[in-house]
Length: 409
Ligand SMILES: Cc1cc2nc3c(=O)[nH]c(=O)nc-3n(C[C@H](O)[C@H](O)[C@H](O)COP(=O)(O)O)c2cc1C
Picture 1: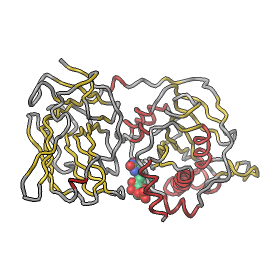
Picture 2: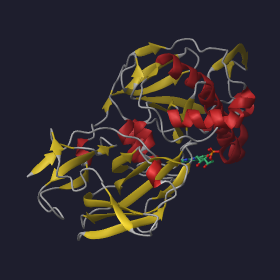
Picture 3: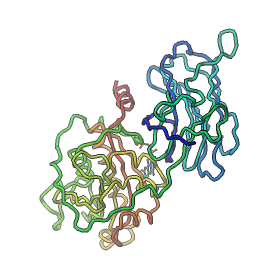
Picture 4: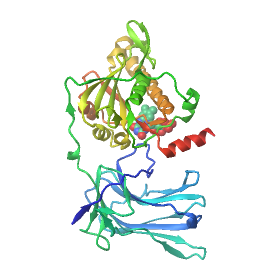
């Protein structure tokens, strides 16, 4: 018998990849931590991974200090579990004396199937003896409404199943399995898609340019909340909005400079969680300040997949996507246009988006690691356009806001 658990979405950093892969974790939180201050611990569990899995299994243990900085973090990055037989794995360490919260669990990194059972934590007392800490529902035997009590999951693209087929011990084990790609929707290309008028961008904000520069970071985790059409309008405007009605040889000048005012960039929006905007893929027209629907439906999972499964792309409420018509610049500057100017233009536009994000208390991250052909195919891009950048964005998490407050002190 297989039972699916209902999914409680839970977010905590379990990886520090510059390029993060998709992962699914099952986690438990320990909030009353005073008795563990400064103590040594051993965290262990039984894990196995399906033979055919591309992905790997990892135990992880994380201690957050009172100042929200990490006090201990281990996720078996260098010793991934690939074995298809049940085996015990262990993480050892010392809990920081300023411990606030302890998180522990197991995750499947990438695609495949993983089983997790018999979770144990031992703490060394002052006499040097190892004493067990009561892990709640340590063997996944307590189930309510098909949900493993006391454990939380993080990713809707995976199944979390209470599995009775091959538990290590007892009746059940936790089984994490990536959903097959067939479950992803096929893009629905729209011919004469709706035209959406964007709200006017604001020309004042509460964050100075200097503060925005000081705070700017690449952020790969966002609040789950939806963002507004006003936010989207502001971000798109920052990328390439028209800022001067006086034209340069008939071209409207923009928020970003462009070599020879060729403006070779084309800007798109992949929207998933924008209030008042249907999920879909849109083309931004900076001159009319409008969006035109090109693909109906949430395309974020496919976009993430085309970007080597960088999972924050599908978790962000929306992403700006840049392409370039190189010809617009090369007809004036020949090879220098291709080798230098177009990407310089892109850099200016991307940095504008980073700074605008700071001013909205948003996070964003430049992404250039993707499969060009997959993006071209997915968006059915015109022949002359080449994809260059993706910048997912969304509200900063509470932890990230705290970090910023601290940094500004
Ligand atoms: C051209 C370019 C491509 C990048 N591609 C990716 C990417 O594909 N995935 C990612 O997570 N970060 C990507 N980044 C973000 C860098 O990892 C990040 O800027 C760098 O680690 C410095 O951190 P900071 O932006 O917070 O200062 C890219 C940045 C640039 C400028």
